[in-house]
Image: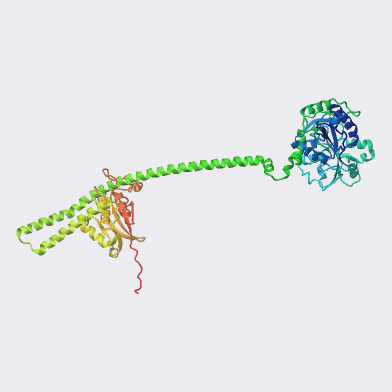
Length: 578
């Protein structure tokens, strides 16, 4: 409902449009508004004003529609409209309500015999004037929200009278038991005591919280805020705004002492609207991106920080891993190159050792060839030879020459890292060939080999097995030099599916710890040795899939036992003929 108090004269100048919100206490309205209207008329001219009265909701709609230049309302309405550009200009004060920053609040009333506190009213019935009233509803809800409760669901039932000036109806609803609690605007209870004392005596006012700032003459249950004020819109000229403020501040007080002042702190009002999620903070009721960010800003910041730290850690870890991989690859490359150089040097030294070994052994077939040739020459000189005799000597020369060539070929193949040709070979064939090639060992060693083992077969290279065994026999012979009764034993046995060749001596060797170093590539038991002989033997044996190990002579407290183990040939089961 609107009411035009002043009608502008016809002219080009735009009138100042003034909107006035409904007051909760009618007896405080008329004299104060009349005095204010007279001040505005004397300042701007009666013909330049259009004054319209609105309900609280109607005033908000008019302001948002741009139909008002100046309006009178509660501080809550003024701050709810802050997004429209509305700015408070002056605030009303009165005797006992002199602080313009703290002269509005709410009295929460219960029946006189109801001893419950505010939080004990959860789930009860409430009476109030308007669901959007500032002093009649929202201020009290702010206390409930400040206590950690949900103000929208705190009361089980809300009774609204939908009029600002319904303080008497609210009080009667509480006194009659229709509701359990009621919200009254500041000083409304004192008005009831003056005009309706019997009704007031049936009620009591809940005390305020302990951290209330400001003092007022009226009883209240809440914190205090600025009271009704005049606000201006961006549509009013700055000069008119200045003249309006001067006029209001110089307006004489009314008979009851009401006047205009300036409030400087609306922070509490803004916090109240925010905690109630209304006005400019209504977006907090929606789960929008803005609300999510506002609500969980610390957690979002922490999550972003943690995520940033995670990515930095992952990036740094990846960088360190790549760096470490590069270092390992470089180290592996260097190690590979070094191993190749070592193998090359070892192979060169091994070939030299092997060559020195066979140089002595190949002397025998060459000496035999020379003797056979000299014998053939003498027989030819004496003319006593026969063709059959010549053929026999020639065959012997050919055999010894082939034997020497085979030895040389094996050295050359070893130097070139060629794999040996392994063929089935019986132990008897190996021993017979060994003593045929190296007859001097037949009288120097003791051979232990059963007849059943002589027919056992292994897959081996005859020449390489001979070289391995002879090398160990030579080591044993050197180890027994200076021993009063030297003994060298070659024992052939069968252990765990492998043929074993044990070369045992009774030399002075007795250091168990030194056994671990015997196959180290640069270790030698001979002062002038290169330490490569045993490595050659091990290499030859491993090429046959076998092993080389050492232990102290088990028959005596000293001496060395070298064991060669070569796997037996796995006999395939016979298959039935088709």
